[in-house]
Image 1: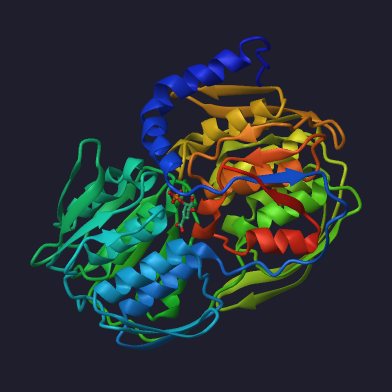
Image 2 (image 1 turned 60 degrees about the horizontal axis):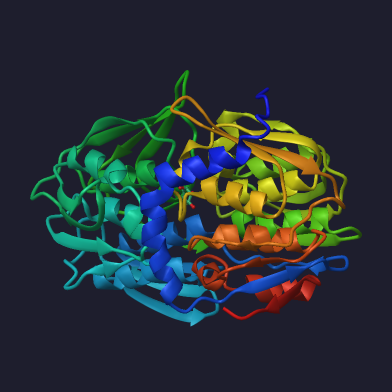
Length: 482
Ligand code: S3P
């Protein structure tokens, strides 16, 4: 257990921000001049009803990309129609696929096959999406063509060498800004070669990019990862008829995948996104008297770290009607407001809840006792430095925290104030990060004083329905002046 270093908490956070973060914060300030939309969240009555969470973002990106790599029609239902995914859809069109939207969430993709993509005539803009851009880099890296990738101010500060460097092993070459930043120009080789490689970062995006690249490299590639990250790419590749197998290793696993195979069209029903559900789920736990149903939620074991942690904290979450849909486990959740207690979250759980730490930190604020979250190093390279943004938001809202940010450990400790003790009363800087915005809006529903966030416009990248869905459940959100 880490000792809380009282008295130097503020200094340590500021210190962290002014060293590691300063460059990114400078870049992100640019967003301030664009159209921002602040929102205030106030203590609300019980949240009640059924939350129809939109489709999973990870699975939505992959369905579009694999559809574009398949000759024939891929039918998708439940697609997340958020900006990140729409940018991937547009990129697929630029590589030559035909995409038709038949109805809300109902899309058809006519792809051109593995190795059949056409060279895009212009720069591809992925907006805010690390997943879309990195997966598409992988999907094109073994086809002889050049594509230029860019994104918004946040994405242009995120590390791309983690995916580009391993792609060079297949024969691809690239040019990027100093530090491996976008814009990136990536060129696939005339003849790709298969690889036997190890992914050292705990990133499903990197693993997935390599699997997609391997599809057009003759021979069998082997991709090893020492931690278990989300496996939607593997599952979906198998559903599309790829020759893929997973070997368990004493530490992690190795994926074997055959190149130059034809993918077969397939129907994909996208389950609902647990990373989006997390906000309504935590809000229902911390707002007294709440009772919420969340039907048909994705319960892939590599995505359920938050639910597991909340159950350990004493959350009343009942999972009913567990079943399979399109090769993924799903189930219905019944959530009731709960007295939470602080817990220690081990580092090995991080990949299964990497996007959920900001809202877990909110739950921790309303718990009795300390919550210690270990292994948060990947949080630093998300849509913002989420480690710093979460810590700063908590401090602004009157919480006592401790951060450890050394090469050996990245840990956040939150001193819980109990269900009625979180001060709030601050305006939180969201740093162009949709999940920071949604997490602190959730906090404001139960804190003593209102919490406002400086910008909600980025929420549209992953969860455009968030504000309406939460209001329909009873959330008191008020639009405020910029
Ligand atoms: C994702 C993987 C995670 C996650 C992101 C979606 C994916 O990123 O944070 O929101 O769909 O593969 P990393 O793989 O970089 O950890």
